[in-house]
Image (cartoon, rainbow, N blue to C red):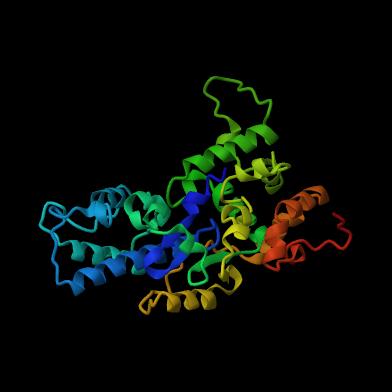
Length: 333
């Protein structure tokens, strides 16, 4: 029913904590932190037991699927160990820990672009699977910290448009084939529905066309008249009250994108992380509020009202106002 939910939830039983990752709300940084805590705790366990385990001999599936981790990092152009040599489990994890903190394998290696979403995280880190929780009712107890970071839903939507739809393949740091296809679908549906090539060699204009924000909004609002339609939305623009089932899990640590630095530091203290590199904020787009306001100024009132209805719970539960992005004194929804 909620296809994004299993991807979004990160339980950490060792820390009595669960984090729900909302796309476009600093999730790259926060997911990296969750992985960091898991790896740090494993390293601490290994060091305390004075164990130097060779990765060729360990059964890594008990903790982390090391071969899969190495393979997926290499697919993303990152090599953290030469697997032909004898490498200790602990030293490999320490290299990965450095990657999570500083986006480099060690203090002398060059900086790397590391996107945690490029990994099949839950296939690698088995502790993030709910099957690792001995008693699921613990998650709902008052002693369990349920973490959620939110963002103004209109800004989050505009950010998703800018990065997922309005950025062409040639301008991306990494390929986003799925969203390139979504962009073309929007173009074909709203801009060039009747286009016919004048010759066999003529490229479809949607190959390099960026749909206007209005068409993107019309597209994402399709089938949102029912809850089942909303439940099937892409996680990047699905209301986060749905993504993270806010009413069900009753989150008790709620940070905001708008006050991220302070709230993130509070989370670091909760997780006893004192050596995080705060200069590395993964995924920051560089767009500002004015840019996003301009996008909404291009929308007719009826689309603004439909967006308000779609994101009403996000707006109400977390005290956001549409007036921060839509300045229309005559708007009546």
